[in-house]
Image (tube, rainbow over all chains, first blue to last red; front, side):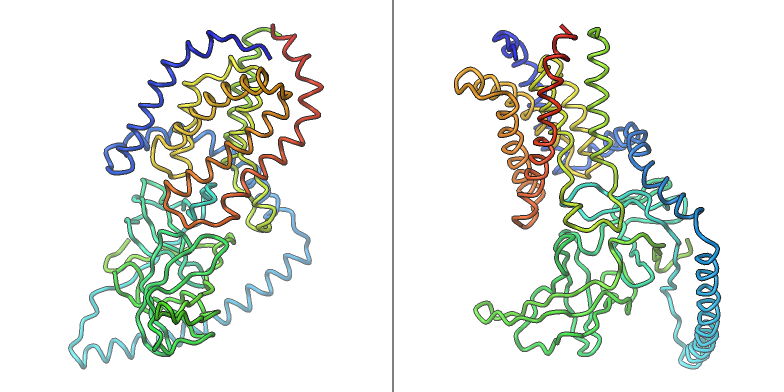
Length: 275
Length: 167
């Protein structure tokens, strides 16, 4: 390897200039939102890279969708017919309940203000950053999605929208360290905040007093506080409760109900307005 | 090989590293395999720092860093700062290790790759205010190290031939 001593010196000025630029950018972007247009422009520039990067996964998905045996198709079809039948029965029950609720509302003079709507979405891209639990979904402003909307999968709470673009949105997953969900313990009706701890760790409850009656197996649902999630969405199940006597608190671990590492359809929940 | 061809190889490998970095792992891949994904950007840049350091443009490092910032949803300037330091410090350290300590380039790159990726992991943990976990800190450098070890036989055989053909 032939390093010329002058060559390094020549680059020092450029290095210093770029170093200072990076530091300034870092200081501004970490504390303000002035650079959002620049980020949007760079994101637009990076679209071809993301497109090429996703090709193998898309090819695998397409192959998986089209190349299936007749037996497999028959099996899937049978399962779908059973699901439709079961869902029809559930739907009939729900319609009956809805009618009863409407009658009760009229009788009591109560008007439900926050109607809940759902927008179907799919994961378009997963953030490759190991320290971040985020995905990009294929619905955005043009579909009626706003910032701070709850997102669920068929099994439970999935996350919330944190940035919305024209046709896509960035979703912070339930297990991201920046995510906090106001929750309710179904059995005891106690309110807590569930915090994410990264991809390989369970959710934990903050500030659980030693006197709390929370137990392993308790079902955790959203409390409806904060207005992001409606009340009663399944968050997960308590898997461990440890008393930390020195701090006078309980450490509570929760296994999320949502399949955060699986590909499935998602629902963006909009409360209080039609999408 | 002409100089233009060598430049296109350089840009191609850097873009390829970027694509591999962004490429999502399938959902059904187990965690241990997911953790073996190396820091492709560090690998690509160190390959060129070690064997054609004059091609390692600081401006390109800055631009690639900005793209990484956006794709990784990190504050703008974070990855560009890291890449700039990586390229600059990498050049200086390699020169020092070769001239003063006399370590062969592949071994010195191996050590530097590990140290740089480790520093990067720690820096990201602190900057992004993420809880410290040994796995998050150690896995990226170890995976990068493993991939570099896999590269060494290939590099040793191709290096001199490639360098001669460019010069």
